[in-house]
Length: 373
Image (cartoon, rainbow, N blue to C red; front, side):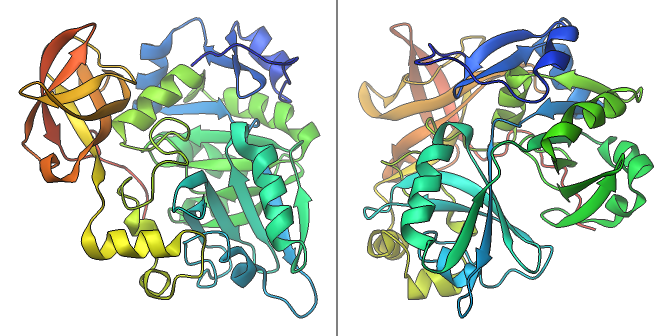
């Protein structure tokens, strides 16, 4: 979860709070971010699964799109993404991807309709490139407002609804992948019932100056503890969720990544997004490779880059791997040739030069707990 910074690191509005809480800060996507707190990743992981964790995700990129006169922001955005954006009702949220002309994924993002504009959340490492991409593609149809200084808090876990309802009772009735404007501690926030852990929970977009006081108020409740990037990664891996730049990138299509569910039926048929011909061909004929879940035997951890083989023949590569605290064992995901991608297929993962027996299994590894009403 660490990287070598190429330039001075940025800080989120919660930097001072992380320091107070004793976080171990590391470079991540150009920011100085907490990878863990003194209790450690395993405790933080269990805290989120069993109670409630608060994550600082203010490094993510928030962008507002508002249609110019005579234009439709949702229809305009559909020229850049394969998702059904025009079908969003006010308060509905969708997961989609920016694609390139070969069907590869430039980034994945969340899009929410507020009724009069669209709210986008893109990945931190991609946000400047994404903004330029949006400006090039949509500036004639939309007013584009980057909101990179806003705070973004993720309150995740089975007790998130109990805690946030104390501040804003209306959030209890929200369903997974919906959003609403909510007043929290006197600040107008945009709250979505979503997240990146596989747990129930919320993401709270705050004015920059409100992020720290709201975070402190949330942490004042006994159910809530601060959680770093380390547990965020182990939680999303258990949930079988892709990490951009690892499990998906410009060389992978949504079909290969098993993200076809995020492309509406009409959009599959009509196309109209970059790389549509490639995606449609893979839908019709099958993709050459497929993202799969992997259960290695024993304690060996197959990290990103480990080869996946059968009888010495390399079939693909691990893209994410680690220890799953909820399961008490190693898990991984990666890409293999589609002809060898069936669940139950026995493979070997090459870890430090040695083959480790493994099996292709369905994902998620840990069942999602989203609130669907």
